[in-house]
Image: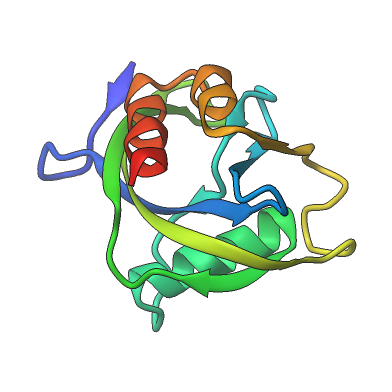
Length: 144
């Protein structure tokens, strides 16, 4: 069963699209695996009280992937996906995505033992994710 919030709207989340430029000048995108289904996703989570959306997205990137860097204050887009809850219901979520230029990748971070991380070319990243909206967003962001 798919759930919406009380207003019939998707639940809102924030996410970071982590990227870096290699020595060859080519862009790479970092994806993480989700904890439950092990799908390739971007770091994302619920908004945080007392933090602006872009700050919460940067915090998720630190917790899920050990990333530090410069986060954009303006979203590069949004996408929808079905989040599976522990009770096996699904909830429709709308993720507002902020760019994160990675300056440092830490070895120790809160969810290090729970996730895999991998750097992809933008086209590989778009192929690896299962959400069509996220794939489109990655393709569009890598063209700019």
